[in-house]
Length: 308
Image (cartoon, rainbow, N blue to C red; front, side):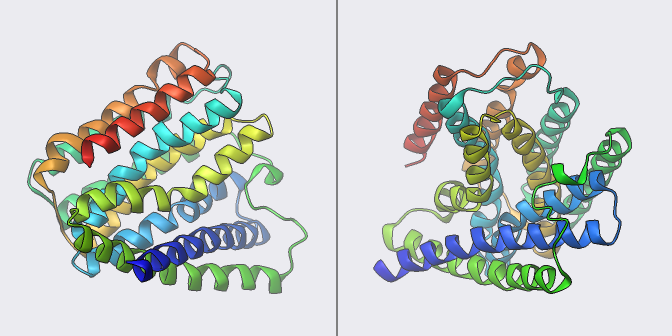
């Protein structure tokens, strides 16, 4: 058990480090090659910050731990809303006025509804995976065509003075650390599940999901400390869309994912419900106060209590 816990901790550390290095390297390489900043923000950064979830889900699926692969995505989306936004709101509150994310929110709800509908077939297989990837292409096209260009300095990880050697180090470091971390985390988590008699689905929905959300969590809380907790809203909505369409899409094309009954009738609906909670804040501009943040965290604690 101790060895397995150490594997999980080492895997989490490598995922956080690898995700940060990959984002920094990819962003600076893209900007150095003259790619438009808005394209970098909506593609490279989105993919890079979701790389831990992708590598963990792929690794789990290829090892036959499909419940962890699916639970990781569903659990990450729940944690993104209830833990990341909850913690950010508790730190400083989140001002929602002036941040028009209504269209992106609709896309997030549509993606959630789509994956639930596909899950009722009993398996998210290759055909369903291609459907999710086709939806991802439409979302990216809509966001890129409708977005205003951002200044390079607004892109996370952008360092205009970065040298080619630095960029190469960041990219190689990220590409090495991410798969290594994913392998250690999935191995340790699977063994813990077996030893404790807990299903792999529950481990994927909680321990693995929270672990792979650590990069987004760290960035959001850091933004809140700097008085920019509003940035967490965009990060969470974008990450949730990408998790469903890209990560589940890619993973299910590589290895079909059977949908456990518990996830079909409970966890997927919790994911949709937590996303719906954001509607009054985004559409009516109601601020997310510390009390709201505490309620979100309490809701997540209740969800985990039900699971266990």
